[in-house]
Amino acid sequence: MSSAVKKAVNLSVDTALLKAARAHDINLSATLEAAISRELRERRRTAWTRRNASAIQAYNEDVDAHGTFSDGLRAF
Picture 1 (tube, helix red, strand yellow):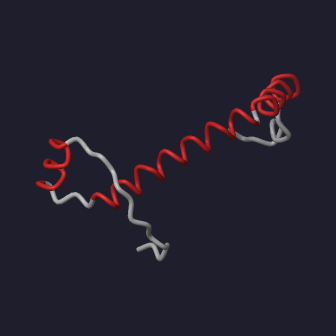
Picture 2: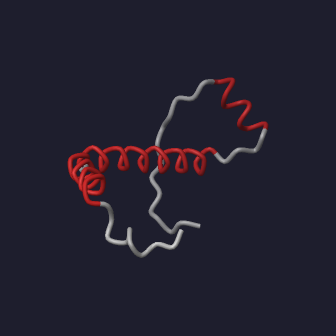
């Protein structure tokens, strides 16, 4: 369980969706936090990939041209 400081917020949710969530005893706060965490992780991953695209491309080109340091050491 997180010891983070919580902040109350107001949200608008589709009535039918809210009713179904309550019928299934879904913890709305925990579900929202998990969804936001997943979205942030994905956006950060996308941003990192975008920022590092040229380095990744350069590395891949170097491996294509010269192989990896362990090419002669692998037994598989």
